[in-house]
Amino acid sequence: MASRKRSNKRSLDQWLSEYAVSHQNPINKKIHWLCVPTIFVSILGMGMSMAAWVTIVATMLVAIFYLRLSTPLFIAMGIFMLISMAAISALPLGFKAWAAIFVIAWIGQFVGHKIEGKKPSFFKDLQFLLIGPAWVANTLMGRKIKPAYQ
Image (cartoon, rainbow, N blue to C red; front, side):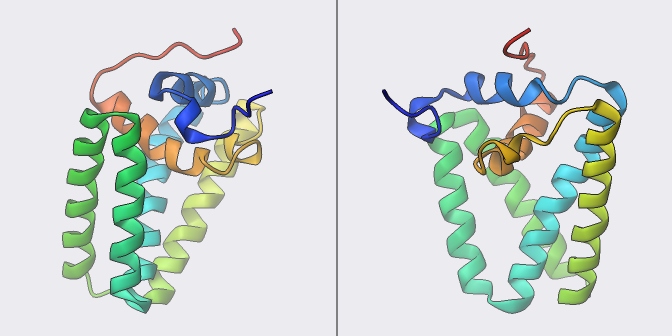
């Protein structure tokens, strides 16, 4: 039996549909629209403050993940990553500040899931940590995805 956990076995719509199941409550959605990009940027900020080249390589690998799912998503996330890197280089924040932002944003995420009454998707599959930003980008691109299993 083939595993559904491999990214090359699921389409972007399948990933987003499954992610949407635990993101139906309007308050949880708003929290995620704020906290998911914040977490993404804070991870980049922490990485850039420790080892810029490692962060850039990791960012390129993440971009490849998005490219395998969708060219428009790859372009949208690429633009977001470039803007994020520019903002990080312009902000005089160190590792501790980025780590604090990361923790606060994750607290927001868990509050959102408490309100939703459902566990975060990444408890099921860690790849959902990369699908969260795709879900936000997809929403901003105006694409509607129906939740799976409803």
